[in-house]
Image (tube, rainbow, N blue to C red; front, side, top):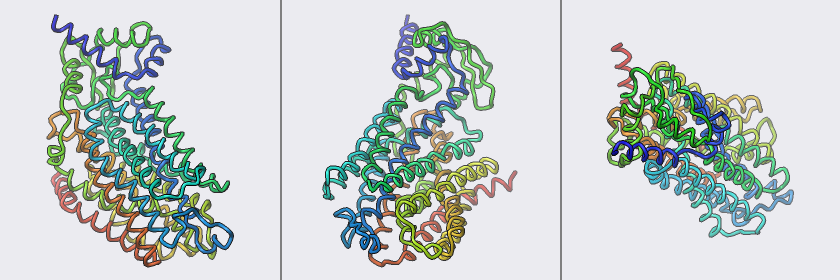
Length: 523
């Protein structure tokens, strides 16, 4: 009788955690469940969509900076900008807007990871996306409502930052739930292209709106798309394999002889889909476990443990080897990456390239090439780290190599458009490579570290600590850039800051790099 009550509790919990849209698709599939492979592809696609939109809504501020605070040439053409950003301290105020968002984002990150580990990640992600879309739209509405007060812009950016902090811990945790460690660097390197794809999408939308002299729609269109994407996530995202009746790739107790999925789960899914019983599921790769029958106890206990175990606290997460080191490293690498994210279009628009200056719209479009390089960098870093089992060495190598490339871009990028594009894309490869690797594969590795003894509620917390620390650097970088560029009127000083940040990031990984070298030599 107790066993029947426990099984009924599992059915109830699974129904609560199973999205209604996927139930409908199972019904259309004759009541048969989907394979692990199909679920994995859907998880990758949905989380890719989710974080693409997160980044698409972050990009407009960097594109519209030159419109809000035009230079003297644009003012002569009758473009007065938008108060209060069009005054002599315009760059500083724009930097304040950036830091308002990023400070709220970084602080929210430390809390959102723990909250995400304690509740349904699908609902948590949906709330974050809809809320974020709303406040991004509110920033754009200032154009139509003729609002010129920092008392409006700053609170809106703070709330947008809080809701944006829900994204990264959630999507990394969901992907980590579905994929084991094998080839994680390459898989997540490809998947992490969403960051650059989102930047490109946001840039192109904003640039197109600027051609119509409407900077408000540069925010409203991505904001609406963000909220709609959140509803799609709520309808279809399956957070964990066990919610769909499959075994977790991290549950080592299930890596033995296979068996068909339990009759109880067949009944559950059939009831959810309204059709006939589904077929048993097949697993083939080295990271997939077959699910024993519920009567055997393994599936039941695994599912119950995941939903009843307590989320790992901050102190326990900080004690995981490598968490503090990679968190500090990400502080400096993200400082560099987000300086480019928020200021590159502005820098291009104010820099003579091949004897001419570009418009704000064209500068925004050109800046997308940096993100295309970032896609290549994320994939390359993930592949190399998998091939040589050397996350630290690859991260440090990219960081050190980026210093001379950034110098070449600053000194010689103005010679011609082709030279500028070449160095910009190479800088994108080397700047975004380690940033992508640390925030994806490294975070997932540490969130499923052996010291956690199989606790499934640690991944979002660890990811939040690492990316939250990095986001503090992301807030400081754009703020310092606005301050330095407005006070000194010399972009060389901004690049000196970037060189220093990359150098420190590489040096922080020295101990872990030496450890990986010793491990390679010992083989």
